[in-house]
Length: 373
Ligand code: 8OZ
Image 1 (cartoon, rainbow, N blue to C red):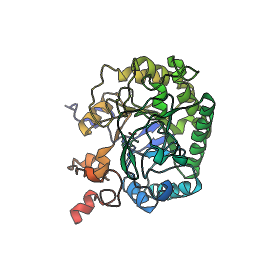
Image 2 (image 1 turned 45 degrees about the vertical axis):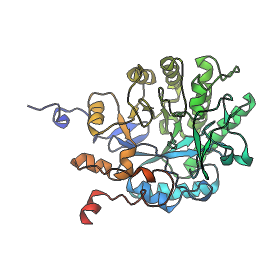
Image 3 (image 1 turned 60 degrees about the horizontal axis):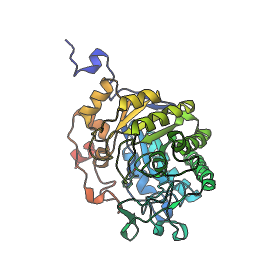
Image 4 (image 1 turned 135 degrees about the vertical axis):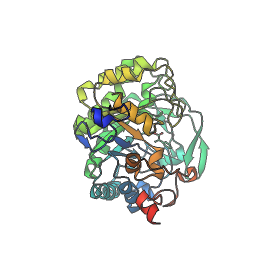
């Protein structure tokens, strides 16, 4: 008798089956989640070290490269990469070439941090911007260490179109850099999320107030980015209930169901959902992620605290089309192979998550290498 733990024999989908996310054809359903590692070189330019890191992880069904600022204003952490000038395009090109040479696929996550920044990271020491002048709790990671967040400057209505254009330009540059697509970062309390949720958006213009108004910025960004790439090479990441970066909303189900339903005309490659508190509890807090998926109607990429068993179950039971793993990819460059063979996983060193050099970045061996060592 075939058993439920033997999905191949009874024909149920498995993590190791190929899947299509829009125009992206993945050989397996194990996706590398975007991970900020703060190892860009001078002026946000990636280079050979980053190329090695990503190429080591090319066994992933898809790599979502780390959050990358679309403009100088969009930067909020020290040493993160950008995609707003020619040097950054050239730097990322070395990364995409290395990943493609290793037979992988890689999309770039487009990022504007909004209020999650600090004047020391902004052009001319300006204030960070947001939908409203509401200071987040917490501290910014600057080049000189952690510094308290400041009260952001509320964007003028007339400035918003310029930021949408920055997304368009960044999308175009990602194409020049050789990516296979892009992911719009609409999660974790950054600018798009700040417009979406009413804890950070108290505007009284066409971008605030009603749900319809709060999703306007997301829709405009999505239109611009899909005009460059076509919808089927653009994903979107959301985190409907995550409190990360001091976020809250009075009715997330209504807000996010509306947002993704409104995206239907763009035919996006996938919706990437942080199910719970980013990097923390998977408690859904009453949110119905299956309902969100039904509203979206396209491929669903699940994320947050999945291990292999949880992911297998989600795929087998049809709750997700693919699963994104973050921290497991840090210490296990060959994560797909380890899952396939049931090999033990290495534990990452938290002290080298952000910033620094090759240590804790490119020196985690693959199984074959550790066996040979
Ligand atoms: C951890 C540290 C810095 C940035 C996110 C881009 O939360 C991030 C991030 C995570 O999406």
